[in-house]
Length: 156
Image (cartoon, rainbow, N blue to C red; front, side):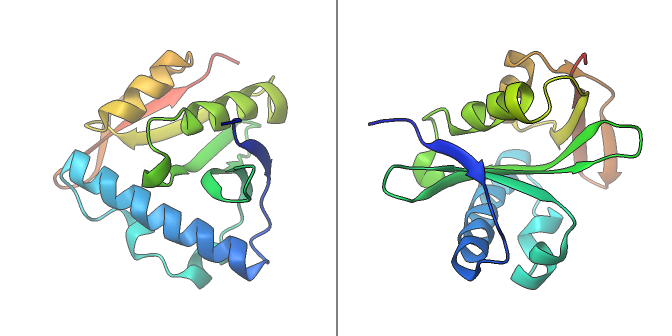
């Protein structure tokens, strides 16, 4: 089976936005179990709230047109890229979709810019992914009781 292709996502399209919202909720439900914290804001975000975010979106789309996962980011005032979310449909877990999205972003979308991302410190698959792609782990922090987040940044 060929790898999904990365392409920009237009959340003004109702079907695209609905697929992104569904995948995000499913992926964050898995993360909530992994980290033992169900207060992840995206789990409670409505479709309208998600669409209203000022983010750039790219998706991994299969040859059959199925959205396998997506990446959303914002440009920060200091020139860095802040990854807001990286989600893979659980049906596509363990097929390299997150790596495909991140590699594309780092090499094609913003190759010479620093990239920052956070994840639940107990989310071992995400921590392994970021470290494996050369992100440097920064300070852990606790934005809410019972939640420890890990921060990462590329060298660029």
